Amino acid sequence: MSRTIFITGGARSGKSRFAEQTAHKFGAPLCYLATAQILDDEMGQRILKHQQRRGDAWLTIEEPLQLAETLANHDGTCNAVLIDCLTLWLSNLLMLHEYLGAKTEERILEDVRNLAETLRGMKTPVIIVSNEVGMGIVPENRLARMFRDIAGQANQIISAAASEAWLVASGIPLKLK
Image (cartoon, rainbow, N blue to C red):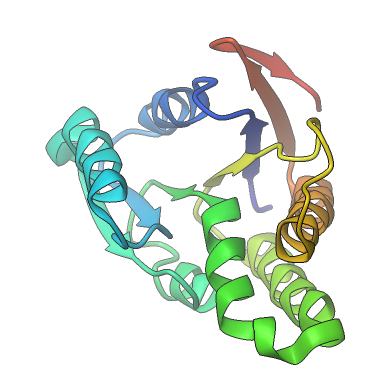
């Protein structure tokens, strides 16, 4: 049976650190499937800090778009795969498919459902980090509202496919299921 651990929380809540600690329990070798892209200096610095914290025990795979396919292609190559993070992947997909207008959301959720199906077939345990973005104010622009809505739906789809779900708040992991 596949094992998927879904970890969500706010920005700088300790999600990634908790996910890395969880992955280490499976033992080396470990895969880190990174969805971030270096689009500016600040993001480059964030990525560098994450890489330094992880150290050499990890094989890093960078994939901003083809998450399900990349995950399936690496099944069995590591003792666990950590995806960090789902919401950056959604952001990448939103930028790619925004031209579809009203059909953008459904196109992205199709990819999310495909990822959920891939997770169900994995032999390797998968840990997925995501952001809980819908707990604040309603964004003032259409694109930001669309992102918030897609992220909320994606979190529901992936957490439903997961065998475990955690919320990290103020550095404290709380088991949801």
